[in-house]
Length: 165
Image (tube, rainbow, N blue to C red; front, side, top):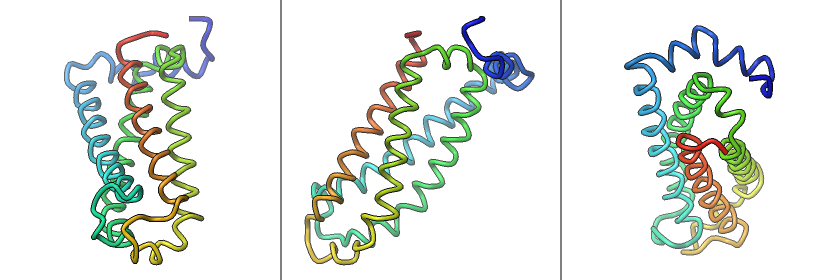
């Protein structure tokens, strides 16, 4: 395929890419790991996002919920990221040419930027939010952007697997 950069062509046709893609067991194991890690990480993040938005666990201090679930979400994200790189490696050309994959990456970046802003700036006053069942607008917006971003990542990811757009 001449429409892809050489590095993408090399990745797909490397021993690693070919090995994952053509293996009877490896591709399904990597894909299952990716989906389970996504369920763990994003499921926990959405739980926290709902708390940020004031839609659940109103009697639980936001700072305590954050401290309890973020380490688990982080481990899930790391596993999801590594398995995602391996899946990309196995089908690099298909992913590179897919509009759905590009949308997935765009929304993944948006989710990351949102999380970075939350962790580095918005969260500075998190202990103050514990006094109220509904956090301030900036925190609620971070939760909403997170839910929308992750939903879009998942939808685009599923579309990538089954379509070439």
